[in-house]
Image 1: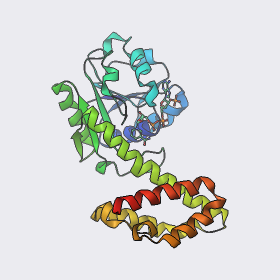
Image 2: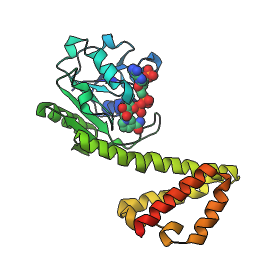
Image 3: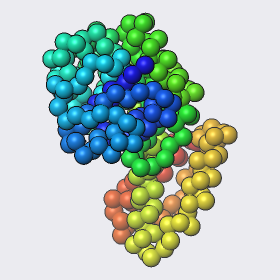
Length: 258
Ligand SMILES: NC(=O)c1ccc[n+]([C@@H]2O[C@H](COP(=O)([O-])OP(=O)(O)OC[C@H]3O[C@@H](n4cnc5c(N)ncnc54)[C@H](OP(=O)(O)O)[C@@H]3O)[C@@H](O)[C@H]2O)c1
């Protein structure tokens, strides 16, 4: 199976490398800025283009990994090439419906790797759940095959399920990461070393692999230690935005256990 990647950002970078390692030929990589695709293309022996009208038709699957808001526009451009009309065209978004591609292609689908990707940051790809969806059964089968070649966890997930998973993913990943940033900012402002909190961060994540988050909750709001909560919110007067965040989350924890 040959694949062409449309987009050489965080997801394109990691998908491209994984496909190459698993000996799936990446035929071509598109990026508006050629230099963004060039480094990856050199590493995985693919061709590059910055012109959607020059996407060649020798691949079976075309993976659109561009920012969510540009998926429809890119699909519209690609569809001008009639040689691509019967190809499998997917996007990699957690929140965008697969139907965004249906105006342009009949064999459309979604190939959403449920992980956080950053260029240059290693990920253990074989553990990454790949959420596959497609209207046609034949397309589904090909996408499941592609998924299984790069991950041991490939699932058929509908548009509706994926949209819900994406909300949960934003909460567990993007929001927690923001809270780490808040913690790091407070430490930095006070001249304290954020690294001292890293074993705590690690243990918090590792506990979750064994137990439910509901059972693992600790802290002043879980215990109902009102005096400690007051001390913390008084201290946070110097960080007013973080003070309201602290209060909101403490209330949510209190309500969960009351
Ligand atoms: N990053 C994640 O953790 C993650 C995880 C799962 C799924 N996703 C999904 O994967 C997709 C790509 O995300 P990403 O994180 O890889 O994004 P990214 O790093 O921001 O890369 C976006 C890519 O989109 C291209 N692009 C932006 N606007 C464009 C336009 N108008 N026309 C054509 N190309 C355009 C950029 O091209 P240039 O290089 O030319 O600027 C770049 O190659 C998104 O749908 C996202 O929701 C992301």
